[in-house]
View 1 (cartoon, rainbow, N blue to C red):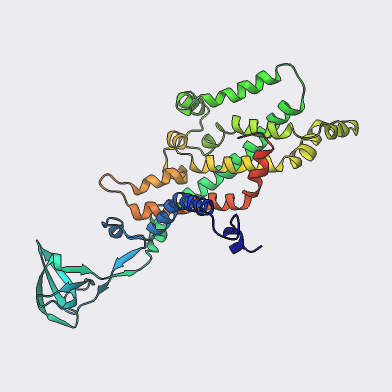
View 2 (cartoon, rainbow, N blue to C red):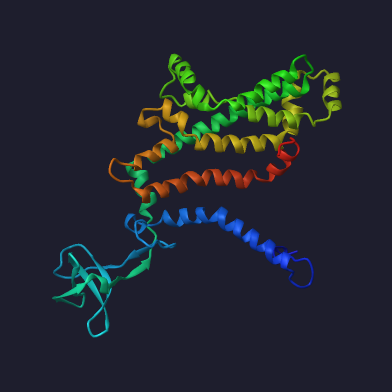
Length: 349
């Protein structure tokens, strides 16, 4: 079955009203989900002036400019001007004085024409402002912020997978008194918001001398109750006969964990990896509290560099936001096939 046949399937040979309703609902969902992302990507290629235009345009459009002899060394903006006789001319604006604009014909720059501003319309063209992506990398040390975020995300995800899988292995494979109570205590920590424990955790980090260190961002949130619960529920579905057979073959608990349980839990580990990457990559509050030096900033904290006291450099901010979204989107594309399998077998809803 081709892609076109798949997306145009219907109940019978003719279109039914339920088919139209279903596809309309799905189309609305696509627009609501991907519309803001499309707007963000297109807006990241606009200039600062284009972002402030009203009404806004979807595509990145800029005003055409032209060099006019005798009018300085800077290009002048072009406008379509409706003259008194109803004709339309393309003129370059020299300056604007109140409600009047002084304009010249680029082919005859010696004659200055005064035109009311309501008669002019800017000449626009499609143009991508690629400098929105290149200048921040040179002026704001954005490469450094990107490297810090990659380091924090990769190392924290690896530690999260190892620590959470060990805890889940103990709570799912071993039989001991109080196992369910321990699991309830782990899940109960989800009810505690980070704002409550922010100050105590900061005091612990400060006493260990890890302030302004990337390890202060990595270690406090390494063990997550969500990850322990997800992996435990998945490991409970593993056949116990396989575990007992490995013990009868004199396999150590470490060998059972590393060579049997971990490979069989790859779908759940992939789901937890996606969650951990999203958590760490988008984390803002805790890095803002423990990182005060510019060279230690992560990507999300570095975005504040584009916000000044008087104005926000939206064109740079939107471009770097797209850069921050790209790694997470790539990870999701490569690991999304594990999500359905991993969540379905863990009992999560």
